[in-house]
Length: 317
Image 1: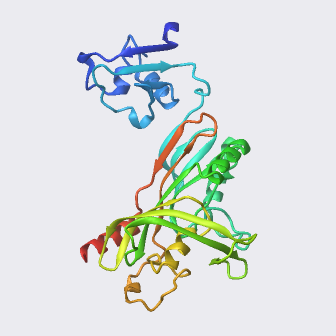
Image 2: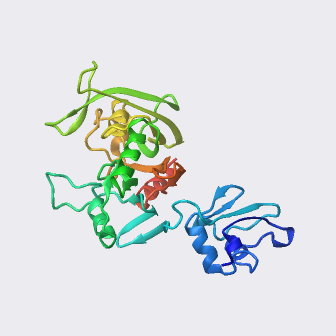
Image 3: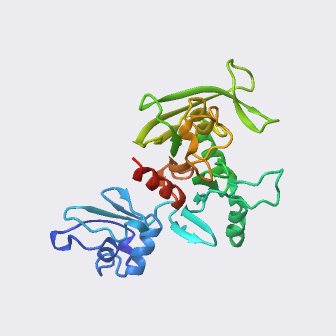
């Protein structure tokens, strides 16, 4: 590639409108080959109207007047960034030298349990995935075994520290989709409780007074869709405590569909909706990249079992 191409900006002409970004970049007077164009996009060196492009944007259609910038010597851009792929049972949404974002299936532990060392976990799968790179996963946060959806793992101790700080300071955004029995009132609001982990029962318990072990659990919810005996909620975690959404919904008489532990009104007629697990899915996640400070946003669609449950509830409306 000619040396004058190190850092360059171009305006998209009317004649080039509707061309794919990768093909537009591959022109002789720009990057001169499609492989160079794709490599530059993959490594975060291409910006359109000052927005970084990813491999998912390679096929986007250009518009006349857009500004395309090549930042060839961008710090850290020598590394390869991987976007969504499925590999050896893993559904990886994003990977770079600092972190991984994975869509965890229900029924799989996020991290191993000391009491069940032989039980498979997502962490163990990532150890195998990273073996050839001589790296290891670092735990940032976790979700329950029977909860599906988004989980972040770091690849370095420093990345782990910075990511965990965001969770502790409530800077990272975590949004869940939840199917609950009944219809919460009002249609949107905030759940706020004091809870304490019971080491003997291995579950959260509500407490009435602030103690050394009591923790404040806070989340915001809104009803997305109402059904005959259930509701689909969007829940944003403010705090992130173990089993938090499960106990807070249950305390209000709206236990999760499929919930077996946090059910406080087991004689309610609407509890007859059958499901094999708690209907809880880590749907959206946003945080700042620990190295670049760039805002990262991810979304995992509902898995098949929850989609089928939702469809059956919609049919009975």
